[in-house]
Every structure is written in structure tokens, then in C-alpha cells.
Image 1 (tube, one colour):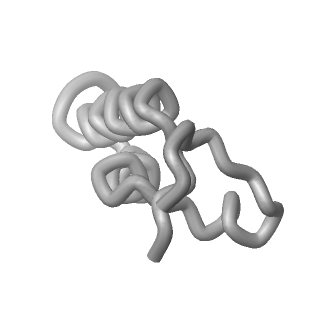
Image 2 (image 1 turned 135 degrees about the vertical axis):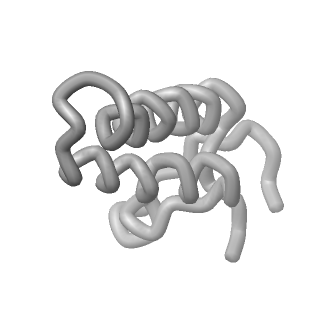
Image 3 (image 1 turned 180 degrees about the horizontal axis):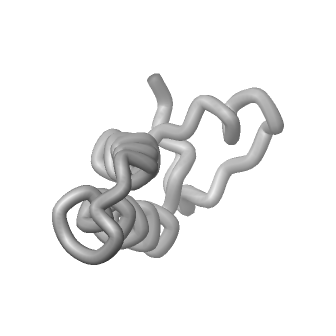
Length: 63
């Protein structure tokens, strides 16, 4: 998998993922917070399958 996410994009995904996951434990305690696994995983890996399909690349370095 080639990296197609830049640093800011990755950081925002990790933060959004953690916020969504916190909904499982804090706040309304809804299982919908498990959706946060997706942005968290893509942010940690640095590659988004949807970006690959659409041809989007926010990474400044070619890899």
C-alpha cells in the first residue's frame, strides 16, 4: 500500500477516530462510536482506500 495521506490529514483522522471511539465509553455510550476505528486505522497506516479509488493524494512525498 502506498501512502496517500499527508501529516495533517493523518493527524486529523487519528483525532477524529479517537473522539468517535470515546462515544462508546463516555457521553451517550452508543455503539456508533465504533465507526471511529476506520479513520483511526487509516490515519495510523497512512493509506486510505477511498483516496486510492478517487486518485487523491495529500502526501507531499512520492512513495
